[in-house]
Image (cartoon, rainbow, N blue to C red; front, side, top):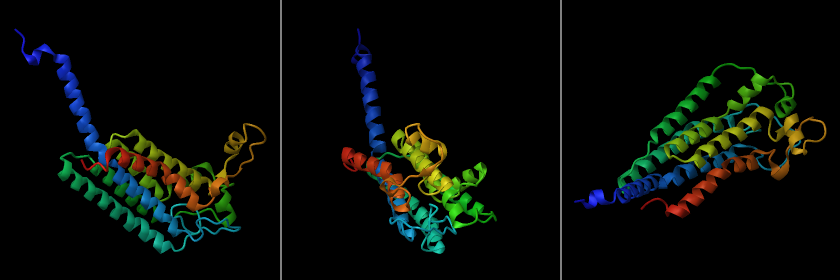
Length: 257
């Protein structure tokens, strides 16, 4: 004689899978909020630049603490923005996760995200305290034509945007979301390109590819949609985060159920 528990094992397994999938969706339905908060942080940094949208004829870059290599309003304001704004954003995200855990009864390992963001920001502060020669002259800073490869790598990483990019990748792991992790890679890739080459600058091979694999690989400048200015560039950087947050909040109703 068989019991209901043994008569339909396939149905039981299907039910277990259904419950597990439902729990997973419920656990990660609130991912929109931290992603949106980080997008707002990135977009808010536009205010740090002296001329974020308009084209300029000359450019003087004395510090990179605004995030991208462009003239900033105040170096002190940039310091305060990232070293106060980033911890406050992380604290807000932590409050969201704790509040949501009490409300819906599920937890997300978000602390690794917080540790990564703060650790990377602290490491950047330590590196900033070390004396390092910057490429001299505004023209050199704009084109980076004569900067050695290793120096370009360092310049691409030496920005407060990189801790945010790394934290987003870890957030994607915590939320089990490839879209979020890839958004972090996107933030890091665009940031590294703009900081290592100069805003809107194209290397020879990039200009050759965009030119349809024709003509000499002499490099150039990408001015489409103003992507040689910090405002449009930061909007482009934050765009995948905004799209993810919007789609997720619509699908889950805010993740509060």
